[in-house]
Length: 230
Image (tube, rainbow, N blue to C red; front, side, top):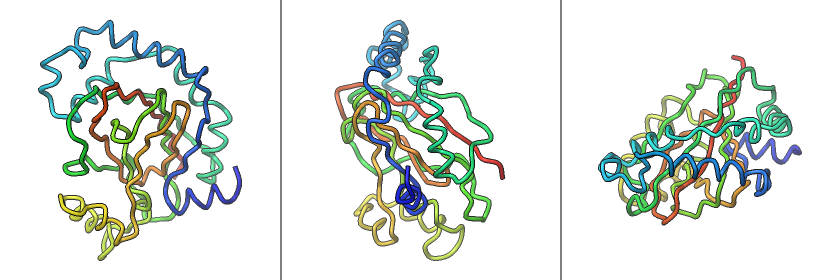
């Protein structure tokens, strides 16, 4: 970690750590996830009733099916916590339990329209980072394969004004030329796809959303929220 990494995180609201964890380290977690899914009678790969749910409810319900003992400790290493403390400029005061983010395959055609953009922590009106959320790729996630999306730069928007959160939410309702409109106000869509072992760190003021899995594979990711003292 160097000053360039810290500056990039401060400017963009995220930082990618390629191949932070080895595939070997994640192999047991991936195997545990797949084992739990196969054991469940409600696994989305076979349940017609699950397929009838809205896209984002499919993700929530599928993710809730899986617990893998030891996954949190394997993912949230002391080295990663040190990096989180560096980009946030203070160590976390509260670390929540790691949760899996799972999407069934073949959910439909990938789109930015109608996404569930949200933040998990409200900004307090200062430039201080309220928390850092880590996203882990447990398996390879291809583009349009259900990876979490984030609006890079949205953590710096104010509540009011022409280039504000309220103005952004109006833009996000658009179904035409959305990425061009976002670029016009200095924002870009980050798709957290990549290789197993990649880790993304995100300023928790950043707008983000689940996305549609247009691939033939289950999306296997995990996340952990690290909160900071206010």
